[in-house]
Length: 595
Image 1 (cartoon, one colour):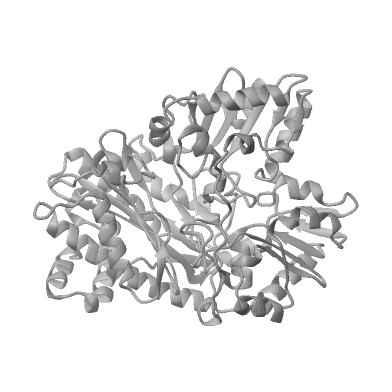
Image 2 (image 1 turned 45 degrees about the vertical axis):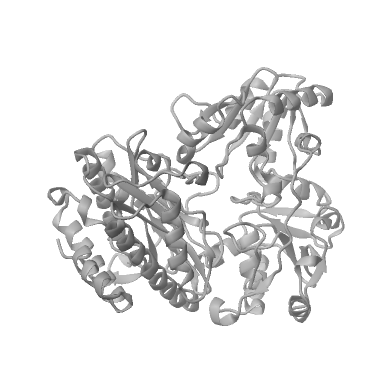
């Protein structure tokens, strides 16, 4: 975007439709974090390409809300669009609801597409509008008539994940869900979350980049199982698979009409993922049980097969990442390496690993000041050459048949400033403290976040994002309900850590215009011990790759932190050594030496 012509078009249509405040959200019919091209309305309107954003448009103003991962990126991308940035969570900045409350006056109308707004948000908007004496129009998408070349929805082939990789049959999973529904007073559930559906039915797809799912809805009743999906995505094999499970196949978008004819007395819907249009279509005589989907918690706790396989996935991934670090550190100054070519090198190393499927998200390969943008994407049209100084931050991951990985390493390319060394060491201290945590069973995820932020807070510093997120099993690399954050959010509410949950540990420091540092490992929650005070849990570090010692100020580390680092590096060395060639092995020994 380099002008505000699309914004002007939208305002003219708002006048025609008698809508005073219009809401554009970055979402799809499932409240997904990653959305396909057909739902990229935020980017079409503003130019912003991040994964979290809301735009509000009035005749006199237009704002874009996004979180701290994207402040720098958003500020650059929405220039000249006529839309101003509202950095979420910053002091003095109204949130979306506060802004609407201020601008939606008596007699006005708030508009949005109810198909891409969750039931929870819809109910809050209704309450807000009612309190202001205003109305709502949520059955029409104004962008539809303006975005004339909107892409079609994808329709990739669905594939079946065998029990040897997922560890539990579909019938067993359906049985567990049915028992939970009965316990919670429901006789049916409509599942909208794409990862929940993929996990429950042991299927995967390729409709969304980096998230191996298929666009679908699933209805589970006492005597009825329906999968709403584009029939062209099914092969003879998958049709037979669903037929054997007694699952009917209905067209994807027919869920909006079918919901008006369901035969159930009490249907459970997750207000965070089921959209307003579907919820509004449920007949009034059917009781809606609005609560988080039980599937989300079930899939967050990995079973023995998933855990065993995930450990193998991380060894494979660690081999690729470690060889990559060696290649970058020994090649810098000798060969021309850019942000994009570095990402390509890492992709090729992962692709050589057995059972590699795809990257789990677009690799963040950020040199120097670019790393201050948490979700920076390298640009092949403006590729940046790496120099023999400073940091290269690489945040990346892979999907393997054994599991999903997410790892960040900040790599030293040459001389560093004292500020860079200090920032790296603070980040390492935060990561090590959380890594070494032991805590009573029932401890909330939010209760451990301070361990990672403590070294930063001690110096009046912080980072504008969570410390860690749950990781799916060959699903979304971002998964709830577990995650480390200092604040409870709409999508990440209070959640106790349970054995089998996998959560990332990724503190960082981001200095705009200077540098960015992040160190990220995945932690598996496991049982620790029992004492007179109850059962205790701890973390098993399953990520396998060295942390760059060239940037560490050892004088700042406590003895406990040094021990944690040394124990981790010994595991990395012992695990990866058999996969290294002679030169890599010599380097790895030095890279993992005890400090």
